[in-house]
Length: 198
Image (cartoon, rainbow, N blue to C red; front, side, top):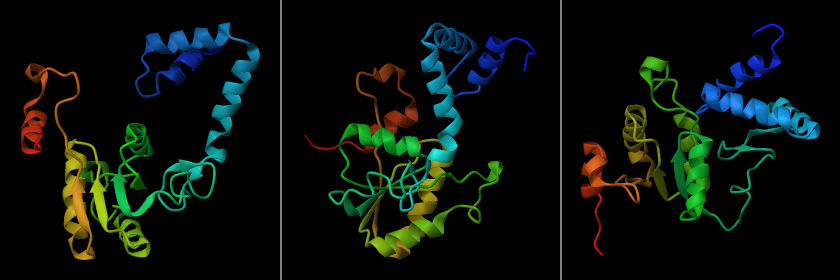
């Protein structure tokens, strides 16, 4: 940290956030400085106490302030349909579509042997226990379309074969409003493979 320059100190902390570059960090810092001092205090207090006020849901692993998150506590959600995601923000992204009425299971990990997460370190047992305990009939694998996400998806599909559940993978394809010319070959190939009748 830069001694005696609180703005530079704040900028150095802000650029460590995902998607925040130095220019954005400076803009945020000056915005906080120009705002009502009560806003700055509330923001600081919220960030400072976040890790003590938020924990993992006892059922799915998503972040919540209660023992069970709102989705797991909702009796209208289909308990027999489970969507497996890598991170809590992935479940949040699916929720924003309003197209899924089941429940989630957050892995908080992907297979990444170079990063120290191999099959021995992977949290497979809690997922299998939950599938059996809750009577899950279908598991939707919604891991990212990265090398690690694909490896995780294949590993889970293989591991769940003997559990007696249907396993599916989310489709991937051309983004809405996207030009085919700029779509990468893997995404375009998957879009063709995952086509459906109209």
